[in-house]
Image 1 (cartoon, rainbow, N blue to C red):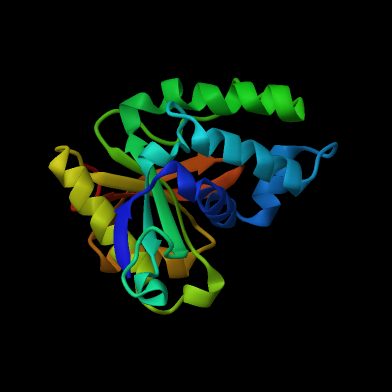
Image 2 (cartoon, helix red, strand yellow):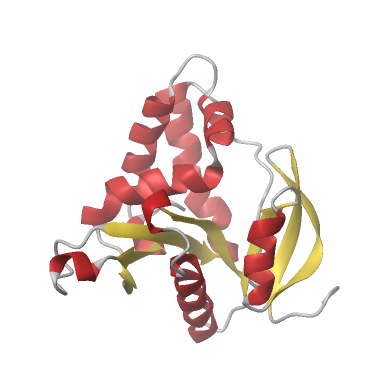
Length: 200
């Protein structure tokens, strides 16, 4: 398994994996009652292909199953993806999502809560396809993400749903610690930051 920067060729997989990370219920909520999950997927593919979207391929790393192609990364299937960006860029990057949601879904998200802030490298989405789970791929993607953030001089940070203790255990096992409670998308979340003590 090779972790590498994504390319536009990975857009379809990244879009699907972002939706997996969001969960079907959340995606349907964001899509609205007048559109389908396929409509949302088509919008997400457009956003991944953009250079200046929070979901852009430029903000993603992918795990490639190079064993399936004898080491040839050009044709290796995507096993998982992680997407993140500098927290200070959230509002600029999120404009693309807001524009597309209004255009494609007739949904107005101009007043969304901020899920990140300046001073952290925000992990927006992490998912692994079901057939590749329980092989340590999520951990490898996370470690790569944390190292990349550190190279930029920022701590990696994320929000985890309070109702997802399994995910929180994975994050804490890799050095993320609780900072504070947060709300996002109507869900109670825990804000975790890599390597920081509570309250810092």
